[in-house]
Length: 126
Image 1 (tube, rainbow, N blue to C red):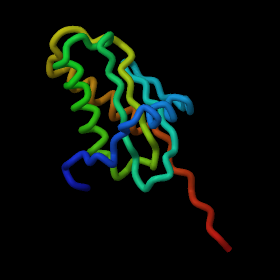
Image 2 (image 1 turned 45 degrees about the horizontal axis):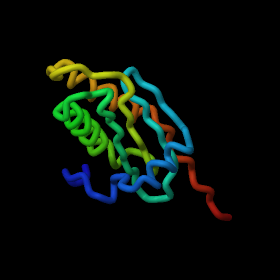
Image 3 (image 1 turned 60 degrees about the vertical axis):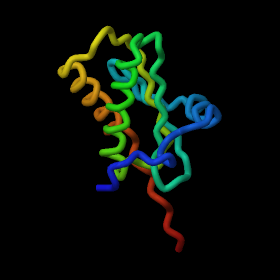
Image 4 (image 1 turned 180 degrees about the vertical axis):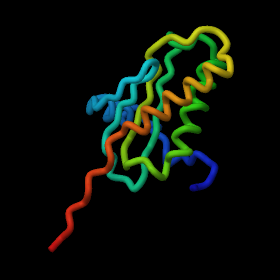
């Protein structure tokens, strides 16, 4: 397993990076989340999160969703193809999140990550 951190190089930072993923529009849908992805040409995957205030009114809930997503990504990071990923919350989350909802969020995020396409094999030169 890689280190326990979530380094800056594994995140999407700029609006241009997010826009590139949005324009590619390769999409996996879950019950509460959409996961958009696009190849990045790097040796590792990068993650961006879109958790709108409209879907999670309280900052504590938005932060919880972000923590769950980052942890799921970090745990699978070495096994993910080299893609830029944007996880977007699409269904509203109300009020405080209990332990069962927290587990459901995490399992849905992990399920979406497991559905990502495998990396395309590189051609061997003769």
